[in-house]
Image (cartoon, rainbow, N blue to C red; front, side, top):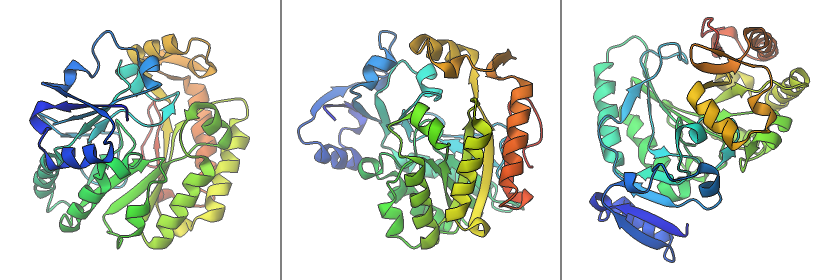
Length: 338
């Protein structure tokens, strides 16, 4: 990091001081509010992505939000939270480049406030039949910045005492050393986003290869952690059937299918405004023209293409896992459980 912006209210925070020690040569700039340097109108995501800065700030207002009602992964109540905005990777399909003009990494260091809200919500659902799920990794990769953020190191142990709550860490990262040094916690799931080799190489710039993600999954699984597989978003292309079949077979050839917590299929979808911004950044890219249509302000694959893809991947996945472990999230309706 060449430059680190520090919000005035967190400049003396212990987590801020620990992070700054990791970058002794970085220029440090104090700001009153992080919004002064994150997402102002004059910024350009693509230019800033070439050399992003780190912003350390405090998250105000609500920190933990309910997920859309159609997104369930076997739990009861479902919530998500974002300790960070923006990602180290540069996946072409990622909605963040449509949402933000800034590619800087915005890290909220007031983890204690996040956990307080999680604990309060977990208490509300203490007597529910199913556990409440808390998803991390919506606006960032949960583990990619782990050596700097210490996110998992702080949040994972907190769930030891939350017996009717589950933490899911969504990631593509191989930064799992800390997890491998710990005794697994049964109500924590490490869920990996996976794509075929052809897709990963074409549109997941900077992310670990498919095999490296599988290797990380295997190590976590052997260590005793619960792991999940997230085929999301499913990307349509000429050879998608063969490519996804090869990926699914490769994954289940190496992992213990009986010990997979869940598998989800997710459709490629973008709000129209995000899509327009992303297409303006990459006007010639095939991803933003192939097989897409608009419905109710959302851009996604046509219903025919999406239905075909989901049917194909469901068939492939059910060769290896039980139906109750497979969850589908198509854009054009349909049940979440397969």
